[in-house]
Image 1 (cartoon, rainbow, N blue to C red):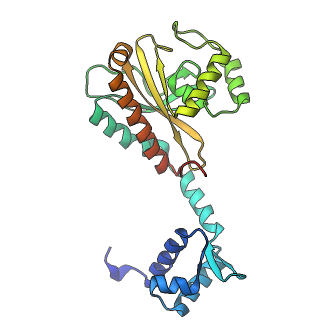
Image 2 (image 1 turned 90 degrees about the vertical axis):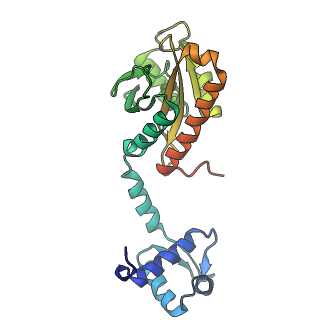
Image 3 (image 1 turned 45 degrees about the horizontal axis):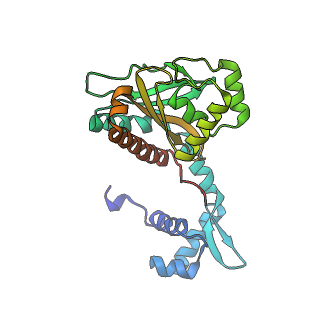
Length: 260
């Protein structure tokens, strides 16, 4: 947009907010003036206006300005408006095109896994999974990812409601073994589920997190079990792709990473 349509005072306010956002301790009026080149008098009026709306706050003891709580409120409202599929779908399409594998996003609903988004490989073989398809938590890679950080009471309710039905000889049907698997998922940040739900599918899944750090969805793909067992290098390359893309998508959902 041409510069003649912008408002200089608003542009200055944005620059001030950017500087404050990059400071952990706050910045004085004098330092802001030095860093921006703006006169103290005009900066003070901008800061006073922003303070009245709680956009910045002034520590009057130290005469230091910091960001205010209003921005947190606005940020949270913006994050709540993010539509998961709007964020994930371009990633799925690109990944499918680049790797020639199919990719899916699943969420937890009523103690079951439900697929909400997909992008298929141009290759002939594909994992048979339709949008809206429901699957059990305990036997699926996505379910294990979605339940990995859930409190024990949530997991127990899911187990009581749906049971630990055996689908293949590899299905986890023991509560203790399931909890051990979930512990591994928490540690590794992904899961490889080989023939636990369908005998010929090896499914890999990684968590997608929101701005609170909560796991809100699972990003997954599948290989034919025989192919995955025969080509470990391919399997681990898919793991790394999923972990990387899950991290990128999570950032787009507002996740800032683990808090130190």
